[in-house]
Length: 93
Image (cartoon, rainbow, N blue to C red; front, side):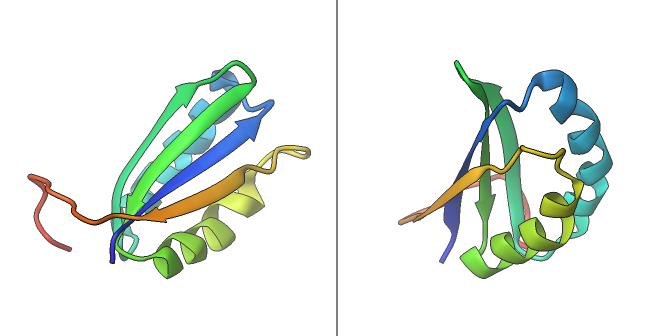
C-alpha cells in the first residue's frame, strides 16, 4: 500500500537542505518504491513530504541514505500515513 511520509526537521534550513537533496536526487530516482519527494519551509525549519510504494521501502531508504548524511543535531520527526489512492502520470515502477 502506498504511503505518505512527513518529516519535520527543526533547524534544517534551505541552505543546509539544498546540497543534501542534490546529492540524493539520483539515489532517490534509482530507489525501489520511490514515487515523489518535495520540501517546503515552516516556521521552525523544513517539512519533507514523500510518497513511497511501501513504508518499509521508505524506512530503508532513510536509514541507508538520509540519516547518515544529516548534520549533527538535525533529526527529523518522521510520520507515515497509508494512502487510500494514488493517481499519477508517472509509469509504475
